[in-house]
Length: 224
View: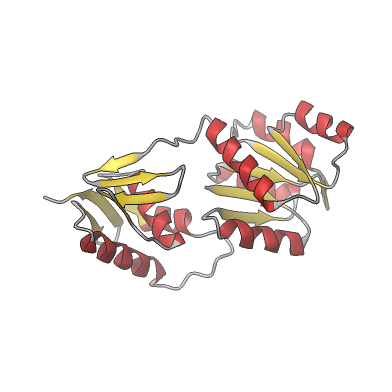
């Protein structure tokens, strides 16, 4: 899952990025409505998480703007304005869910999962290629009847390739799928993740392979 977080409190944003990252959720963080407008329109997100009181205005005002721009990702308002009337305003304005601060991280995660299940833009069906299966609902990857022990970014590599199986996936697409905007990326980091995934595939006798396409990217396919 990849979300856009609009939050101007640095400490809360950092805590959320850390907590969500532990659950294999990538977070792109912005602090202003102007930045959120650009990122939501031109990025690819499963869910948008917006505060209300921002330095440059009211978070609710961005919802109709994005809907007119055909941005369909579900929107969760995460704000200290948590009274009944505030929640009614948010939902009437087009928010898909509303959670007040302070909040429990487990409740936020449950609400994100619920929004993802209802999203028309996200497929939660299992992906299968050869004897490799990926279940995005549980973030589990298996070869035959054995689960693979994958690190977070290794899982994200496999997910990005599985969603585009038998097609060349450019390095740029993989980097976007595996890293958040604020992540520091070493030059060979992506190749290292793929190398480790290949070794795990080999150890479990996978019938698929990740083939490098020189100067372009990678291809996940059944071995020939």
